[in-house]
Length: 403
Image 1 (cartoon, rainbow, N blue to C red):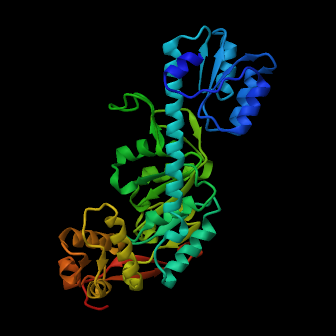
Image 2 (image 1 turned 135 degrees about the horizontal axis):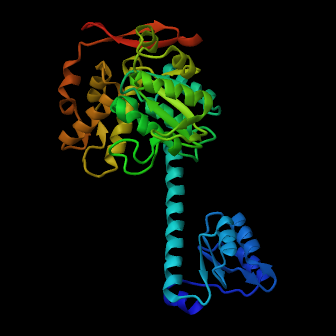
Image 3 (image 1 turned 45 degrees about the vertical axis):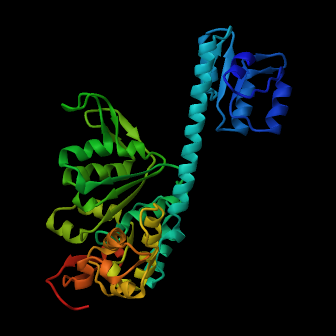
């Protein structure tokens, strides 16, 4: 085995007893472990357990003298990545090593990605120093440690998904999946399959079983974006999941239990939707346990320069654009705009200016015409009081020049 492994280019350390194995394990972390099921002074299963306890991410391949089902099952249940039987076949061992190291690299990449996501969506990275944004951050701090269902209110483009991710990555579920669904982008016939999954044959195109978003988010958070646009029939099933934490796949009979923290968002006035019959009142009170309002950009224009510089820096990392700064006159023009499209519109304006600018500084002339000409459309707040929380929802008013 040593000869085979070394010919494949691996560096190998061979030990002949359990005691020696534990000593080497304590001195340095290996990338991969092969351990015999039977050693003179130890059980391979015990060594497997100790290796997995000390280094949970290090794959372990068990070496057995037979294909006995009980031995194989015990090894795999104990956390072994694979097993090989003696006498060891050259190709079988090479493939097992390659597969184990592939799994190791995937785990390392996943851990790195999770760390990067956790860093990216940290609470302090939410941009804005206005009182309105300080209030948003404080509410995230209050809500993140709990499992309560959260309702995020805000116009389109204000950054509701960013708040949802900050809630997830600031809470105890940060290492688990964050899964999102845009309820407005799915048809009535597709949304239930997307949320709950389906069994094979449940409908014409269901050629295999599919796990839904609730199952994919198990242990983590599920973000239901634009929940106000969800069909009434699906609202009833969502209510049941929130209450019982169980559901059935489309076309299935088995009840599936999940442990999911649900975060909802909408740009609609849900109280008005309840009154018009477009949204269930019982679901409204269930999701409105704790509401966070994300203010429109026109109400925090003091944050525009910092946001613009942030979008400029992010786009600049690609190395595609020469501009690395924004002139004072361009920033002043940005601060004068009403931003009906909110933060998303500002990001698009910076990206467009970078595409046009051929110098190292963005000037007024590089900004979109809508920003320079001004947009007369105004959005006025409609004061409502959902479920004991004083919050602003929105309605589009007639065109007005008032600022």
